[in-house]
Image (cartoon, rainbow over all chains, first blue to last red):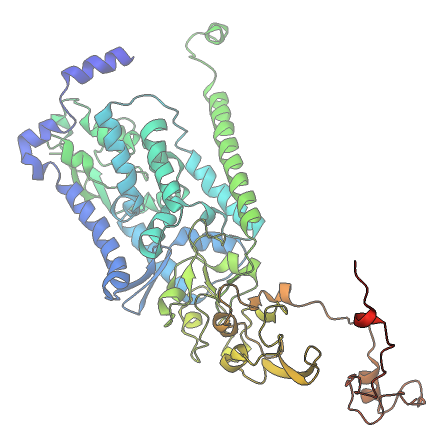
Length: 294
Length: 283
């Protein structure tokens, strides 16, 4: 297996090389750049207050107040809080309702790839893993996150506290960047090492219960990726190599179990990397109703 | 592979249902173990250090940990940078707000902006009067180093108390060391102390303060409800419950105020010659 991988690595150019050759660097990184701008821009909004005294957004991703009027609350946290037996004030309830409505419409895991700061960490780990050609490891089942989501709500109920928040690397990272880390670097570093050495896309794709929660909101997403030009696919596998949830591609690209080319899997994060790395322009970002092929 | 040979032709490996059950059991077991670990850790680590004080209006600690989403909006609206979010390693539930009175005490804002900012009710908006806040209870914990207990007039904790003369009073007592001065002992009254920590902050001792704000539970004993206090019963009934008692004179203390147990300088008894210091004894 490793010998095959080694030879194929020697023969095959880097992932996305075709796309860069045909579309240019910017064309082959368009969605990635937009996504980084979104992630860093949102972070900048949160940091503008403590760093420059520009209080546009207060708080962090757990709960925030924008322009002193728009409350936003992480619905998974609120679910834990309810499970732990408290009924929060209406600000938190309204804030969570707004967030849920947004992601129900736009697409649940848009949070993961366009907002969540942990995505920068796990993308970096995945990139480094590809560059170093690291193989193997132990990948947990992709369903682990749903079980973890369920059990964390149970744990919140049983302990009467927000159990997951004691270890949640996602909220620790975001809060750490804005309010100070302490030793939380260690937990974030642990996620990086886990994704790099133990499980490809292990954290975001298999374990994170927060991502699982947003997956559950992803069934009605309007924004979807379509393999509209799938007839042009030359099986280079670049899209599978960069996709954080590679299992979502096949039904659409290879017409396995569906006939239309739209990726409807709720785990697709709409990151658009497949659009970027495809040298044949097979994919495009469109709506879930756009079933056309071109 | 032996498995496969036992199966009827056309079926590869164990049946899908059995495989699903086996996989699901493994995944569920792993997730359950992880949750159990996190749950137990959360339970174990939820003890709050005695020096970490919650913001005003905070629910009881267990309810607080269920309600606080660790957003830091209370921290942002605190005008004095008193509040901070716990970082991993602080010993306080990560991301929850607290303050350390010796570093920055609560200034007891009248509009209580931290409580107003809390979106979840972890800080209870039922608290409208900051004087009713009970963030902790000040305790003059070290009688050996407190300057007032040494008979000096420091009084700083008393002077800075926002509820001066109610939450902290100076109680006059006889100074047995000099035998002629008073000691004015700072005394905290739990009916009024909000636990803001200004006394602890301003204690003039160089390192640790002699007066500290502790969680109420640590600072206060339970009331002895099973004791009937004679003087209270007497006041409630308008008379003593066991009838009038004969008041016996206290010999030797006639004409002195209550509690004054100083020995009056009486006629000095002359020392026996050749005793004590004058004995001439040498080792």
